Image (cartoon, rainbow, N blue to C red):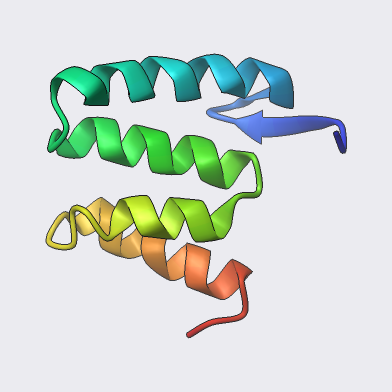
Length: 81
């Protein structure tokens, strides 16, 4: 672990992000195509530095404006354009 991460205006430790990941994952088990849950899970992955995983999730909602913006950030972080 590389220390705290800045999320939504406050510093948090990365293990706290695993709870968000678990909650979104559980929600997706009930609503697998919910774009808001997909975005939440993708942002959680990005906060953990898992950009390829986040990009794979974002591909599930390609027309969502936030997904497009976040996917661009993932490609930039991984050196893909």
